[in-house]
Image 1 (cartoon, rainbow, N blue to C red):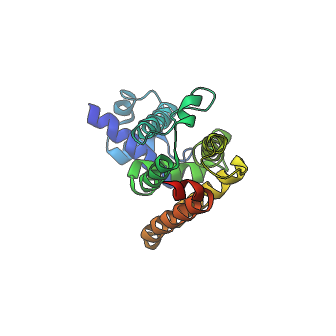
Image 2 (image 1 turned 45 degrees about the vertical axis):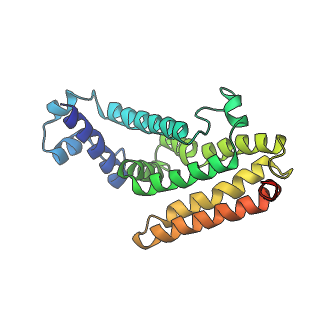
Length: 209
């Protein structure tokens, strides 16, 4: 039974990423799995329940990954101490791992594609797209860099500008990686970007180590 529920989740997300959330009906999901709608409803109340479970899964994965790389799991308002104890090496390890996760993990890739596809048709998903892939990560990095600037760990720069300079190439390279030929090159370019960013903004820290 657990396998069936998991298969429904993965199949639904794949269809949402391919056809869009609105276009992929419960009948389509059930048909793709070779089960009846009644069998599907034994695991999920409706399509919205499936969607909510997908979002919940991604949120849980994000928290687990943040814990693993020792970067903040919550917003600054909820956990300011976590932001003050985050250094650039933890950020580097996390962002590189996050890139590989978002470009190589099937569930994460389909989640990202679903958000991109539906952002112009569904206001709620547009908001989720911003939170997960655009304004949310920028605000997260801004809070981290603000604390680093305050502690003298990097030059006295505008934290918002630092966040944009750091995250914009990450976002662009996610799109480049969607082509089969671009995956390895995108990862290489990201690593090079992070190295240059650290050299340009954390040179004083590096020289004193």
